[in-house]
Each structure stands twice: as C-alpha cells, then as structure tokens.
Length: 54
Image 1 (spheres, helix red, strand yellow):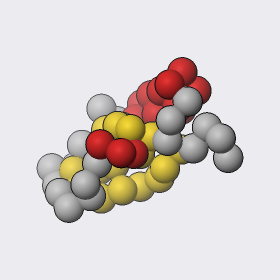
Image 2 (spheres, one colour; image 1 turned 120 degrees about the vertical axis):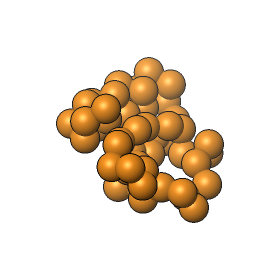
Image 3 (cartoon, one colour; image 1 turned 45 degrees about the vertical axis):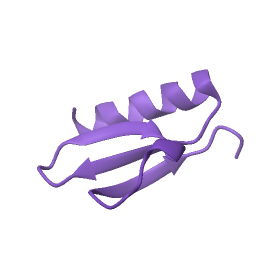
C-alpha cells in the first residue's frame, strides 16, 4: 500500500480499535500498519505511531 493509504488506514484502525497503531516501511519499500504490540521492529522501519489516547 502507498504511504498515504497506510497513514489513513492507521488512523482509522486507531480510532476504531482504540489502540496504538504503527505505520512502517519494509525492506522492499512497501508500507503497512499494525497494532503497536504486534511489531518487533527488527525487519521494518517504524515511521510513526498513532496513539488514539494522546
């Protein structure tokens, strides 16, 4: 997914699930978004963390 789509998806997930969501970039240049507690950070570059409580 594109970076713009990943940010929009992350914002939607954070608001819906009320958990912190991390937007990341993988080694092949693609982007994604997952709950913060599901990412280990070794294989991806974390770009931003969206916290619905902040």
